[in-house]
Image 1: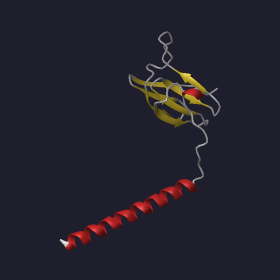
Image 2: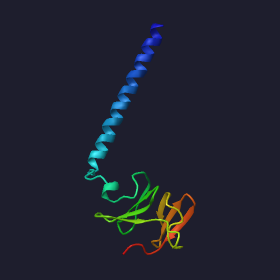
Image 3: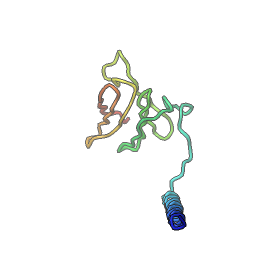
Image 4: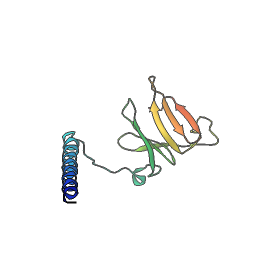
Length: 124
């Protein structure tokens, strides 16, 4: 019984040391990278919905956010929102965005709940 307690104590100590080292190195790496969060982007800043399903940065530097309520392009200052428009067959086929990607020619591929869309020439 005493040996089992000693073994459990040593195992616990190893786990504690591992956890402390892990926290130290992950904290150090995030600090060393130099990135800091300076702002919050949400509905008040123009995002169509606070539930973001996908984030992508294109070759031009625009940040794209896929939400439950459309595709959002952020240029560092404001959002431009792309949504489904029943009267426009060139709009998104559905507003619920699951994935965002870009191909080699700069076309933006959008995965929605109802299928995929490709946007060409969205960058002004």
